Image (cartoon, rainbow, N blue to C red; front, side, top):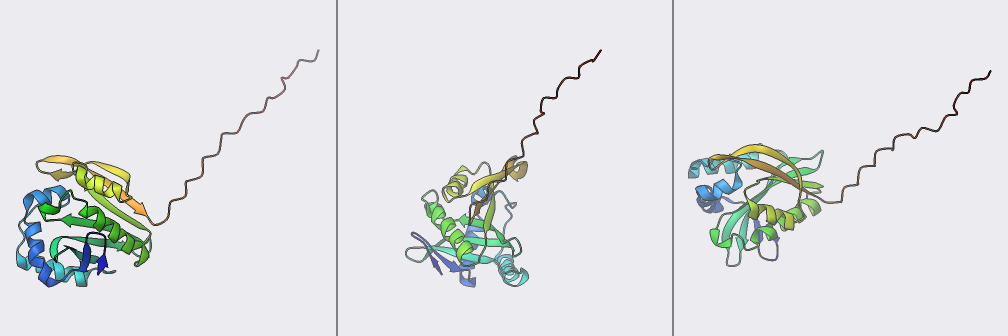
Length: 197
């Protein structure tokens, strides 16, 4: 369990899956993510994903349910695509309960998950992808210390149109600035040849 200022991250369990199924089958919510085609998901398919995630990936991803005061599950988050050699991972988050959107719960979760990644999993870089049209998510990630690394133009199909995909990242330690390229050599003045009679 990880405890933030406003949220608690609990390891994903089977008894949370029914709540996650509600979030996944909310088409408008899925469109905010822009990564997957919003297809209906059955309880059986979600259970298969749960089993696959816990047995199929190495190193094992960190998948958490997001809980608020009173024990209510409002979403889920994850570190996945963990690269042990480069010490990087992808962050995914869904605030699925609409009553908690735009109220800074996402920021609390992102900061808590990044702290966990750096301090306990010894990762050095956390990255994510977000559709350009999801301004609320972009503000959340920026406020949580993420900066833009690149833009993939017209990369995702979201709600009937192509959208840019923005890649963002945060580092455990500040990156060193690359050395400045060397200045071009100056040409020293050469004496002019003189004609000697």
